[in-house]
Length: 272
Image (cartoon, rainbow, N blue to C red; front, side):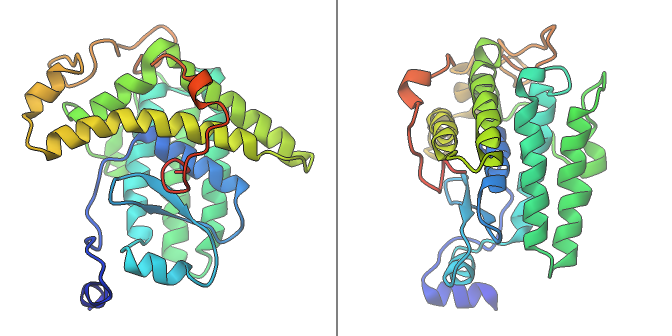
């Protein structure tokens, strides 16, 4: 019935189909929730970007029209899980602030679903547990079986995302981490923090655009193996430059600070 009403209203997006989200887009989108008004929710665009729905009279209709709902939280959990395994915040203190801020964002999102106990419980039981497990010291990668997380090995979109974010010893993640630390410090002092958030969004938007090129190639009918070869992926589907390092990162683009400093991504990317 809901699908019929949405079609009647002119929406063409399916009610929900699991998608692969860029883990950093997902991670930063959740973290930015901490800086947004109470009642802000997350949604996934047709381009598979995470964005925020700000509270207001039109929020419910917009979410209904675009088929957004808390069923999309599963895709978010999958992306957060892979972020923990790719970037190993337990071993990389220079990026821990992103994950810690993401927990604050999830806690705020759960309060938004106070009238929907099942959704709130899922956020605490799954998303926060994943992030806490990623931050806690551990030797082996997190086991996805406990959270029903699919294996992304060999997927060219995930591989490209890993390649982009893990380059240069996680340089861009470290820049994002620093920006979140500055934003939190400013927020605690009731000082302006939006410039730091815009900087984060600019970096995320630029890198997600690189990943989108692979998505478009696949959607246009290009062979998956050909897409893999352009990424330097090994036979397991992971970037050849992304082997586990002594620092513990599961992956390995130069930081685009000059190109993205102060850049403003839209709430739909970007803000992810």
